[in-house]
Image 1 (cartoon, one colour):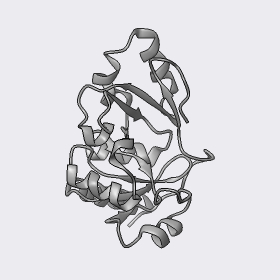
Image 2: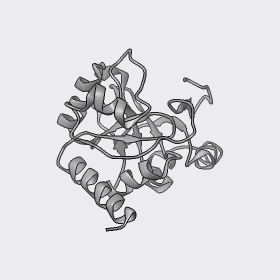
Image 3: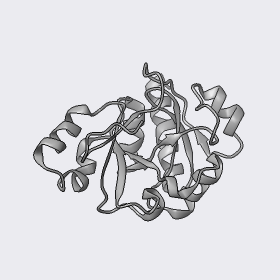
Image 4: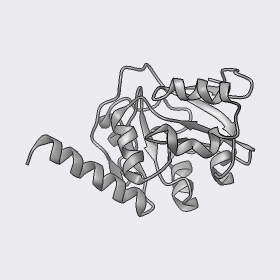
Length: 187
């Protein structure tokens, strides 16, 4: 079996875990992340519990391609939507008006944080899933995000359903977050 076949098989396993309501740890541009189905309230609750994070903070959703966020981008003017498209794939998260994500993703706000990662495997995971996935750093609140698979296994290995082998990219940390309407950088 080739390395590509092993990699493809592991990616398919991660996608199956997501479809079954599980939580997957995976590499992103700068840190390891936790992923789940954003429309599965129980899966999102597990992510929040793993992190020790308040639901009212909201969560980022990531997709494998810009077209997955067509619903969110169509409510923006051409200039703002164009700026977002030009930044992806990349380590930039945009806060945009929400049109379809549940309150357990938005933290009860009328906006949602969306991104298309600049990390090939993270995009492949979302594409394999068939849409947006939750994308939040793999750490407990107040603790630095994991930067290696070993760190994820040590800190969260017993509470996540699958750790997708991979390597982080060259980015130095979590994605930058920008409010699409004001242009203000939030993180």
